Amino acid sequence: MGIFDSFRLKRIAKALGDSDANRRADAADALGSMGCAAVAPLINALDDYDWYVRERVVIALGKTGCRDAVPPLIQALCDTNANVRKSAVRALGGITDERVIAPIICALEDEENAVREVAKRALVKIGIPAVARLIGALHNGDWYVREIAADALALIGKPAVAPLAGALICDDWYVREIAANTLEKIGWIPTDPVVRSYYLIGRKGWDELVEVGPPAVAPLAGALKDRQVYARENAARVLGRIGDRRAVPCLVQSLRDEEVSVRRMVVESLGEIGDIQAAEHIASALADDSEEVRWIAAEALDKIGWMPKDPVVRSNYLIGRKGWDELVEVGAPAVAPLVQSLADSDWHIRKSVAQVLGEIRDASAIDPLTKALEDTSEEVRGAAVEALGTIGESAVSPLIRALKVRGQQAQENAAAAIGLIGESAVEQLIPVLADDNSTVRKYAAAALGAIGDSRSVTPLISALLDVRKDVRESVARALGDIGDDCAVAPLILMLTDEIWSSRSCAAEALGKIGSAKSVKPLIQTLKDDDEHVRFWAAWALSEIGAAAEESLVQVMKGDDWDVREAAEDALEKIRAKGHEMP
Image: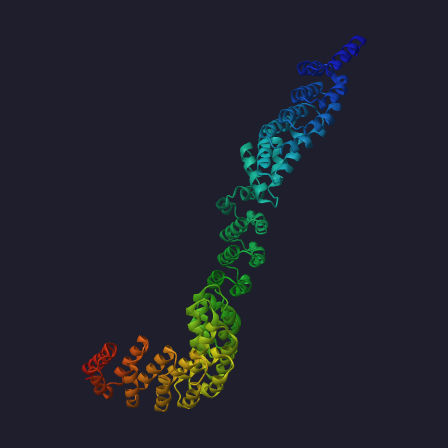
């Protein structure tokens, strides 16, 4: 630079401090054409308070083309004004220096879309040196940054092909997809079948992968470990359609996949491949938590032609096939697998399992079935009751424990199961009438009533004096169900109980027993203040029948309208029954 140019530079640089913003901006423009010597004064002007001046300074630094301008331009990328940042990106893109690439890549994350677009164009202008950094930007957490980076790579064209092809084997599904789509935009067509397989995985071209055939096995095996469920599921499906036995080991490993949909597809594909060596691994899926997986595993084993010899494995196989009758034939070895299936998410399965366990009648199933008395499904609870009743006497003690420790729903079902077991439960059940828990006493009485054994009559009569009305009422119903005349007198006394529901239960029980000795007390009960009690008294008299008819006719002559109506209802029922008799 000559003396004149040096003098001119100083004069113009001095104008950067002018009070007029336009003059400062014009000075910056003039300095931009003066080369590297102008960089220092321009750097000082980057602190100007006017964004318009700062923008002109940034443009001028870019015009110098000087490498010394790179650091201040990088600093300008942090300017508060988007126009300044945009011009800084453009300026950096015009300087041949590898230091500019990383900052411009960072500018792809700028909050202003205009800055991002300028950064993209700058990177395209830089070309090959920017490719590696752009490939890295495909991993960015911001989808917009990934899209801009992909657009830049597509515009760079053929020099980006090899790095993009390398990105096809990345473990990030989005990177693979965007790499494949970018390669398509460039017009790249893979000729190597393995590379084409990776390309198609990225493109989600699953059906085309089937056409590639065996060369696709290794790439698809890698996709079985993908973080995305859809990729693992489709990889398993395609491997099954290709049918190459080399896929078996990787499919077997995926039998432990955390997603049911993947395990289901893996089992199905192993069945399609049909390798007998995989049978034992497929058999392990017979114990899967998913009923669907178990079912498909059983179907896959059928395709292969495998027949289980071990009774436990055979049981799992039959559970998968829902071969309930065959499971009964397996017997005791089937109990453990069946018990495991009592926790199945499908209540239909749990119900069938409970039924089979009842038919097998193995004592080891008693505790699990007792727990099933609390199942969320009424159908399952009912099946568990019947199963325990079928198992018989050996279930009594566990069921009595259930009466004492489990919730009310289980207590009710346990009582029902004990009732089904019958007479062999009576001796163990009678002492429970004295349990400290009134709910336990109530259900014990209900179970004894269901059994109907005369040995329980005397203990039940004593229990009519229980302090809790719900127990007294359960006892009354039980005595009515048993139908022993010994209970008539105590039940007649209960007709005077202070609680109307207890009096109703006593009347109902007397009606079930049907003794003529209860006619007069029941006639008197027709005058009860409570309509429910009068109803049950009338019902009881109608059940007693002809022995009560004369007394009811006399009641019809009385003055009390309610009593006459109750007596009339009872007479109508008695006479209706008389017409029904042959």
